[in-house]
Length: 198
Image (cartoon, rainbow, N blue to C red; front, side, top):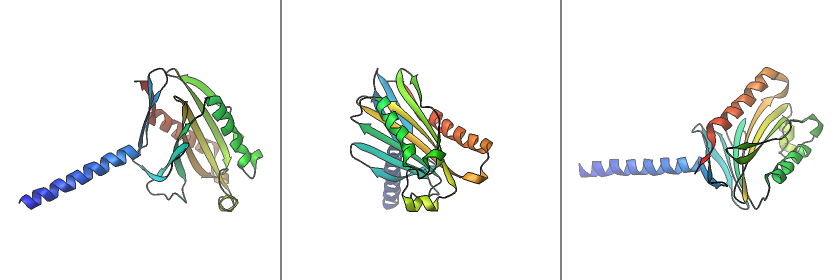
């Protein structure tokens, strides 16, 4: 009986440690200026596909049924240090349209800046062909466009970026369907990115 109880306890502990680690993997917390706090919660329907550390730390999350090398949706959370102004970062992001084979085909909305709970944020929208991929992948994705929304949040000597990308078939997707994809991303931002008092 004792062995059985010990076995169940070990399973429970293992599960609780796994759950905690899994939660931490999908949760980001940062102190911002003016005694504000940033919280980013990745939904449990996504899994960590890739992580990089360095001056820029990035974590890429994909739906649980997709592969990091073959995805239709991806959420990237990046922490960029030594970036003095959000405006500089957003200007750099704006040049991404030049990385596509067909930059003229990319429609970019104006970058929107606003104060969110006294913290400067920026929102960038791109709708066009896949633009951050190599030539071989670009050929494989011919006929596929991407809607990319990137939200940047100014922190203490750093910038946090959350980018949500959805791929869709270029010629088979009507404007109303694209509008639904954009709404899906905006809902993600509203529900999973929070700036609040510390």
